[in-house]
Length: 213
Image (cartoon, rainbow, N blue to C red):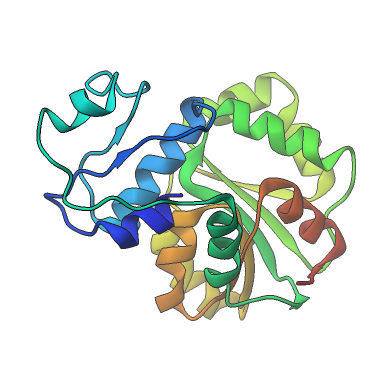
């Protein structure tokens, strides 16, 4: 959604208002939406009707003003966005990255649950970016041990994308899979071929060491 809206309504001073027959996102969903909107559209603020406090109604979100544009985003547009945002559609996967933004403890749990005890392919790396507090909680709850047994690597206290160019130069890795819209948008200039997929497909790619269209 953020990739589409960000391209439709570009600009720091532009405030996109989103409304529709969709489930309200949880905290992690809002976090992903916010960082991706900032990446694709340069937005400092957005409204999600009924969710953001100032936008309990569409009218309240606009404060009586008339919208500059009125665009419709359909489920098929979301599926197309995943395809169009990818430059890697088939082939070997060097690494799978969950980052941008750093993961919450609930997102780490979702990765562990999604792996279902499977191991990462020997030629593929799985990397999770977390802050020190989430790493400590993961250690305490046994999530770190489960992920390390599967072949995972944590990146603690740092953002992934600033070091992505150096990592590619040091390792030769090029083919990357992620569920982060922001990461897809920022890695194109770093020379990566990126596949943008949902969580489950990312984990399947990490286990298989390959991805297909």
